[in-house]
Length: 381
Image 1 (cartoon, helix red, strand yellow):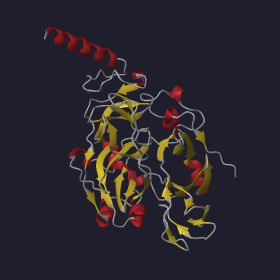
Image 2 (cartoon, one colour; image 1 turned 120 degrees about the vertical axis):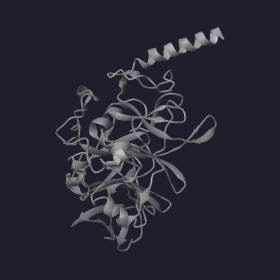
Image 3 (spheres, helix red, strand yellow; image 1 turned 180 degrees about the vertical axis):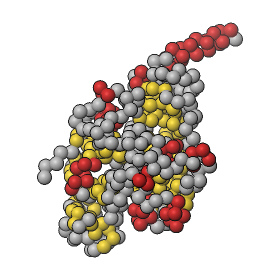
Image 4 (cartoon, helix red, strand yellow; image 1 turned 60 degrees about the vertical axis):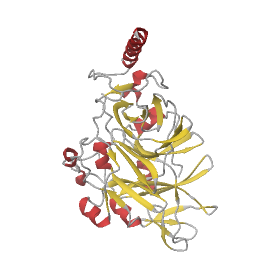
């Protein structure tokens, strides 16, 4: 018994020493049960910002339909929208700013909806993960830690730490495990209900009274000014990649472990970008009508940054080329009309749906910190 007690004391001392490698400027007690002896990143890159449990997650939240949703929110408010097997849900980025994570289900698929406002990273993952010889449904919450200014998530199953922007476990029992990304779009509430009139929208009645009072407000006023920099207390300005302005909005695509990004500035200028990345045929659409949640204090007064959507432009085995004519997306061959969600609503191809190319939205500084070898789209027009 004495040996066990001594062993436990040594182990606790070891854990204390290892956790001390993390940045902890506020000297927050290490209350996480994470096995920090297993890690694939330098622990000194992780910053403990808030105590464990500081963020209330949205676990299986309530939703409203079109009529209630359009009266509860304003039409240009951005949401993360996801559709599976004909059913669609949307989650307000503004509400997610206060909670950062929602554990939910859609068409019986367990999904993880995430948003890190410091990096403007909105991504949806599959919550099923195989380990220890079986398939497990994971539940997540914000850990209270950051790395490169990006949220570090915590799974409640093993208290492993995960990088939100990458979907990869970085410290703990499940180190190096990866979550599968689920295709999603960041569009306006109006665009969501135009495409999915039977869709469901995350309700403002989340059950967190203190948070509910602040929905519609932005705690990061003027944060997304393209001439600004990320908060230096969370990101070393010396690490900023000089190839793009740090607060430039970008979207990324992946093929065979390689990445390419496109800036909002380029996509907005041309409206449509037809491109090929390592034989993958993609098209990017931009349309005005969606505001930033990181601009003005009252988000309804924020600037219109529009919507970026990315699709695979192979349809029924044929490569499609798109253009924007008088604000309408059209394919050059049939001149059919398409909306921002990749749905053809008029013309020869009416009823066809482009496949969403898995992508996510970020600020350039954050993405390039994690993926410095990323190719950056250059306009050759």
